[in-house]
Amino acid sequence: MADAVTTSICEEVTNVINKLKTKKTLRKPPEEWKCGFLVSRIPKNASPYLESFELPLEMPIEHWGQDYTPRGPLSADVEAAFTGERILVRLTVRAEFSVPCSRCLRETGLAIIGSLRYLFTLCPSKDSHESEEPDEPGDGFNSDDGDVDVIAIDVFQLELDMSQYVWEVLLLNLPERTLCSESCLGLCSVCGRDRNEGGCECREDYTDPRFAALRDVNL
Image (cartoon, rainbow, N blue to C red; front, top):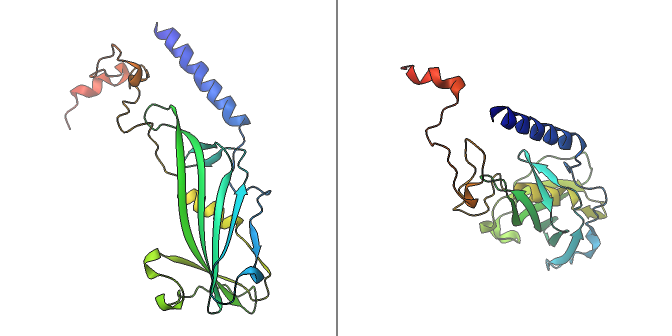
């Protein structure tokens, strides 16, 4: 019986290794993402410019040591407005994934939505990347909205490409652990059976024979 279990485990490990060798995952924004807009489209009277993008997600995203398999395209909503000589952009990202439950490893649906704000300050040269303090609340945005990333751009830049910022918002909102339900019982630590599908005959106090001698050690 033990030999059969060992053989089964070895075969499963081999299959996992082979999958890891051949799998393709995303670790950076896809090159085909197009989500830029012309600076000239932003009204000069501080009114917001709104635009939405639907971006393809065709491969799993590798993050937190696991794969997040997309269930469809990602959507990104942009709200941009001038605040003095700066451009305040609020970026909202929505996406749906399938990811293994952290307890029982069942594929579990995951819907995320996240927002960040970026303040682009217009500089005479692209070489000027020194961070600045955000404007005061009266300069065009609410201080209760959270932190703002300040980014220097060339004053003559015609277009803002939001691809890398969409990717940033996406990764920041991928949870490290996902549960199929709060009441998930997980896997049996002895035989590996999904305890949500029924119990097993394994003893809770089971100890691996290789560590049996450690039970008599007093520390």
